Image (cartoon, rainbow, N blue to C red):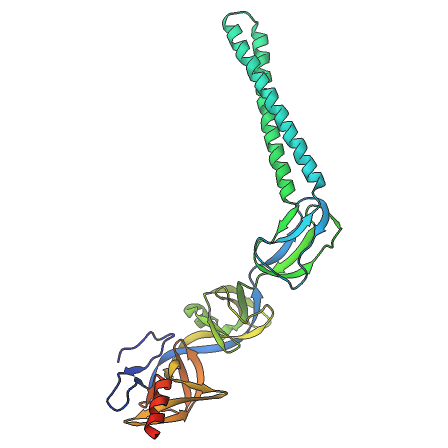
Length: 338
């Protein structure tokens, strides 16, 4: 028998189609599987924060309310921009004037260069022309910076969401006058979540050494991407905080939920069958047991899932054979009865 990966696979001996039955089977065996210690944890978001104003103005638009979903980059607030547009117009006018002054200063300097070469002007007059040109260049650079600042201030009148998420709080209302640094909207993203778990001191070494875990919620097992360990114990509870980082897009989880987290602390022997072999009807679970050319549907009690396999707590014994395609097995059994 070729074993599949121990950690999350169906650890069974797959048998080919035999002459007795026209479908594939698998022999149930005890195999090495992870030994978990399940603890309680609390879900929290990774990305949450408050967007603040970066310019002054009056709130002209607030398209989203509390609990609304917002796409990344969507406009979440818009200010009146009369002052910012006027400032940009002034800055652009100053820039045009600075360019004209520089052009004139450079023309005068070029003339002075020719005249100083012919000794038709004094050195002081030449130095003055050069200083005026350098001053015009500096004024142009300042004017360019002024336009960039004015444009930036105008852009700040439109506030966009830094990431997709849910609006958790609105700090301002329509028509309200705001100033730079004033909070506008708070939000959080449900895309990236993590779970905080307080691990007893007696388990911390094994949990940190193996560093593998999974979250259990709403009948699903969600493998952790990584674990973050905080190496300072809580004196009162004798626990260590462990952060379980979940993959992006973990569905059915919400901030504040209390869920179960299984930490791998070793290995054990478990009786496993392929998940595909299980027939689930309402709250009942069963498998087709094959004994030669006899096939019977037998109820089983299942434990945790391990990738493509599931643990059998009762209803099967080691060495029995089950159909890995219950649909074909059911059709064949029905045909045999007719």
